[in-house]
Image 1: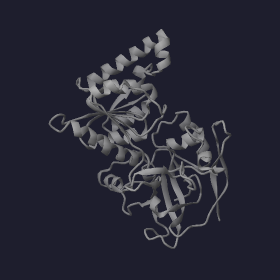
Image 2: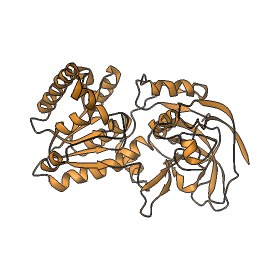
Image 3: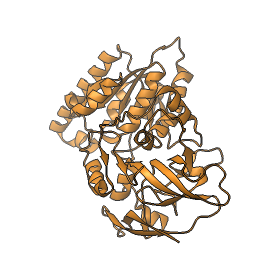
Image 4: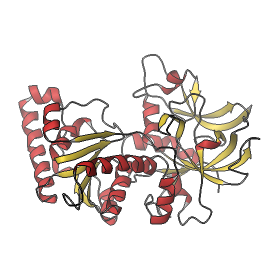
Length: 383
């Protein structure tokens, strides 16, 4: 058995209440032949980590039938020891964590490392073990920093996989002659920003919505049109209130009309070609209305709820395509593309890197949406 220090999440009561991280000793089994012992260097706080702490939509400890777990599935690690059958890595290698624990027969993710996959652990530990298929080697002569790579696996990997499907779906109906420059918009956080940066490389006109000045400045600096969410703050759809509360309905409709007029101005009346909506819930109705004909609505997340409603008849008539993906296929193509083109998280040396003891505060800040950055990186072990 191997023992290390970790920030641990314990199983909650049958009626779920939010959990908390506890710093304590954590013990896990010795290496099997195809496993490696590694030490995390940098990690990046991800939305699924907050879902785990909030036990929403599941208590992952109960789901995995485990008393306690260590979360965290995006980061850079250093190899300390290899199992007898490991062929791809050796001691001292710096590697990128692959966030997938199990894949289907063609390489699409089934269960996520350090989340819903039993027996897996994450980077909120001073030491951890991984199967050799759960690591990618970082290019020895990489042009990018380790904090940038730490933020890459989930947000950028997920964006890469989703974009291939969404853009492919758009081009099935609208070729280059039909629409040479598609309009791609997005609600959401780091995955959306990554996807819009990728869309820009594919020659699309891009726009991203945010309500924070620092984020709007970052969006603009990346050549993406910033859209200030504060101009239509009442765009928070609630189906029950919409039917029963006249004042709410009136304020919502004003916000929706203003939003759709803005979309029309920015897209020359065409509507959005591909809309990345990882929020859902309160904005989903407006997203669908903002889509042009043959438009694609695409998502990899459910920040504000997993369930949405729509008119199937309207969506058929408008020829809208709905794309849903999760994680990244078992391939390192996104890494090579990133290294070659510079499609990387916009993290600079001046950006805050949270320390080991700051992790609970980071978790609270992410939960409360008070972070300016889309890529909250933390350090576990010294480089």
